[in-house]
Image 1 (tube, rainbow, N blue to C red):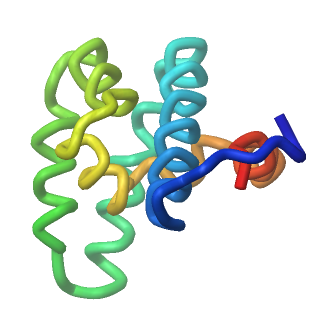
Image 2: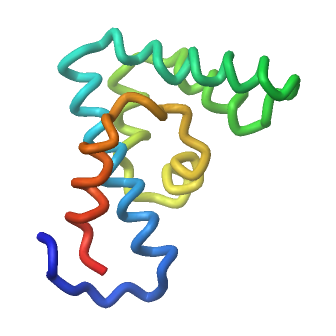
Image 3: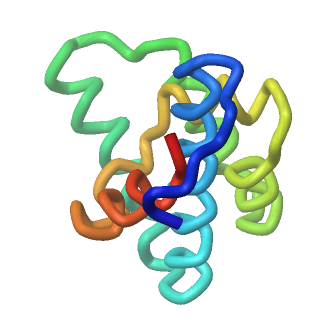
Length: 110
């Protein structure tokens, strides 16, 4: 809730929680509209064309996206080091609106 305080060990912990909450919302939105699962693949393709380089994280995401949705979903919302690492290079940009992202940022206490 906005205005509430949390004693984060550091700013990175709060950012990791924002990313996790963001991906929980992304998973819920894809649950409601599975066609949105095309967004991360299109993003990776576009970013690769723009830079002429496929970052290793994108290659890893492409492999993950080949898995069944329930497996991808579990990874998106997991609270472990691997999921935290993957969320730092998310290709799910564009699934949530700017307003949805802002609401998540505001909901995670400082």
